[in-house]
Amino acid sequence: MIDYIVIAILVGIIASAGFYVYKAKKSGKKCIGCPDACSCQSRKEKDSHCCGCHKTSI
Image (cartoon, rainbow, N blue to C red; front, top):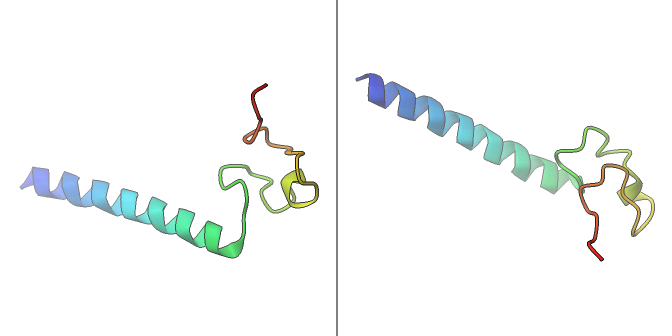
């Protein structure tokens, strides 16, 4: 019985995380994990990112 409860909790956590990502992408956020995603440089300039999550390797 405990196994079903643990599985239900894990499924709930994964489903809510997936819904959060879906909702954030739908609203147009570029950097979902960035706390400044709404005011991030990536929204203003094409190749400049304040959060560093999109650094290109040379």
